[in-house]
Image (cartoon, rainbow, N blue to C red; front, side, top):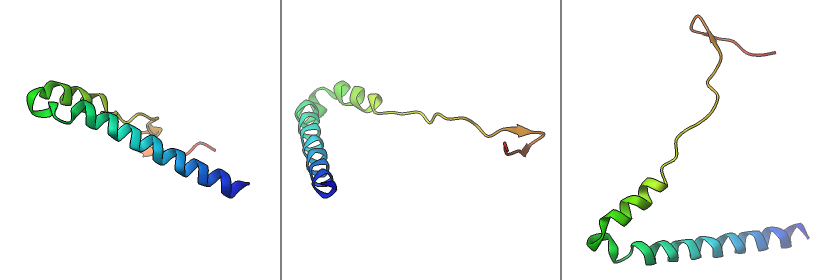
Length: 66
């Protein structure tokens, strides 16, 4: 059953990626030159900032929590 699950998951993921790429292609395809704002709105929406917890420091020395 595990192999069937992995196969279905891979197939589903592939289909989702194809659908996403087709959608983006339809939206941006020919409009990139005639309406570049739509392209840059899409690019800006894909920007992700790194977030996380910085390391703990004391007097410029890293300390580990035990």
